[in-house]
Length: 178
Image (cartoon, rainbow, N blue to C red; front, side, top):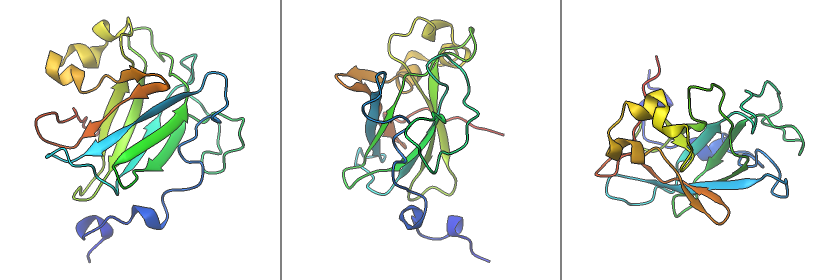
């Protein structure tokens, strides 16, 4: 039997995106930042039909245990968001900067990417630029400087920019989860 993961897709737009999926906090929230970027293929061409999810701690480093991610109430921070890319491959989240859940690790956004041509999701992380804990973080310190650079966002006037390169010269480091 052929399943969607084994056929041509994507099928994301038929039920996975939802209103407010990219708004982990309301845009007017006092500590709101914008986390955005593009999803790009190996040739640097934007992918207009990808889906990006983020999971994160709150600003104090606590892992949220609240329910309600699919039915945002404007108050409850659940630490999870999902948005699709637009026709230019761009995605955008309104959220807060994550705090470190563990003193020995740098704070990060956990990221899941679904896109055409992938038979399974890709997992990666987005680390904060110039964070003092980055140098000692176990994952970042195990990578070469070039690999590390693919996991660290850059700052802009509204928050953070992070482009996801699925393959090619600037390929983002992806993680394996067993």
